[in-house]
Length: 124
Image (cartoon, rainbow, N blue to C red):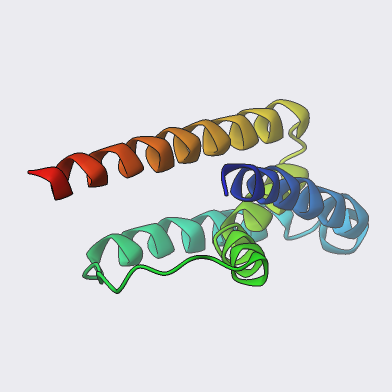
């Protein structure tokens, strides 16, 4: 799970950056406004997501298909960030390494500690 989410979070900014580089000649007149709009969209999306109530459903195992869909769906904003980096003429190497590593590490730690906490909670 950690590898899937980490890989998608690292790959999507790279994909957005490549698309931005290819489109740069077509949109160079409005690139700063496009970057502003994309970053604004991501910011508002984060604010909106933080206000939604959490749902606690039944436990279920993730299929590979579901895992890949969730990994892709949660990394769409990273695609927009990558496009913004290209429009702002920022190198993508360091951001994708940091984004992928941080996502992998936090998900790995959260999943492993969550499993241990769940066992402790059920025992108590």
